[in-house]
Length: 187
Image 1 (cartoon, rainbow, N blue to C red):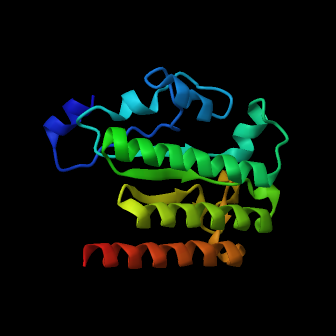
Image 2: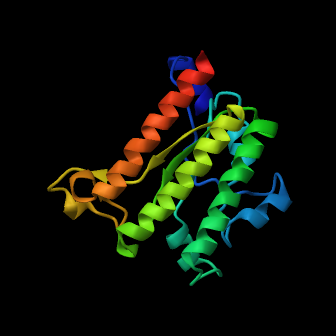
């Protein structure tokens, strides 16, 4: 399908849009998965020539509830999250030779704004440090920013900027430092 899309218009960047679970292409990497695989393979799916950049998702509080690591603390989830991002960054850089974007991540709004802010700050710091270290980390996108009045679409991860000022500030700070980093790397 990627080849077909590129044949129609080759100026569009394509990505796979999967969570990033490791499969059989590198069996030892399956140990990074959060207890299950869900039938995908980060390496082989992103190794396709027409795929321009690699993406991963991460929902540690949800994945930890589903898998055998249920009940792990926020600190344990952050440790796992750092391993998750770093392993994909290493593989995007060394094997795939493509940029990596943390295309979706979140912390349940049910955990409270303070817990979510600590989580997001840690993830953002990790993303920034990897981007600064070597060009492969392209950035990160939170799930799910919403406007006032859209609360009925909340899947448990919504951030309404006007109602979450500390989270809004964290997102804004990350946008500014990533922009500054991009300018310094392009100079």
